[in-house]
Length: 209
Image (cartoon, rainbow, N blue to C red; front, side, top):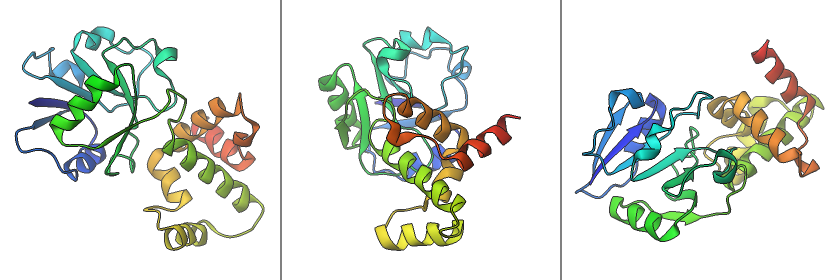
């Protein structure tokens, strides 16, 4: 099986850390235009952020796994051959893939062939893990603004106290403030628990200025 992966350098590094079946060949490319819809690839993992001018001709592929953490399958009008995954930095190193799929049977078969364990979750913004981490980051920004502790101390406490790979501010830097902000904004529209910390909002506005 030949698998094409569109990724950046950090995502590539995390993918290479995974245990993959020996008969699977993974080819890393930077952009969809490099592929020219090469039919020799059976599977495509699109780990880049979905741009506004997203080239939907990739939907011609048999099976596509798209990094769409905030936008759902329904919202993006992804067709039956598309599956949502979390391709944010730091999440790809997890042993189990968290996905939302139109077709669980085919998706399970694909991941089994590649050798990657998978768990299916509801087609909701943030899936599960990103929603949890997003809330932790948000609470850390509340605490920082209230003077509870420093970024360094909270990161260390999270790593030592919960055995998380990163602290909340390390996660924020890895994922990106924009990604966290947009996820929380989407979640807060239906659940006030995700209302964005003022300090995090200011950080986002500084980046957008």
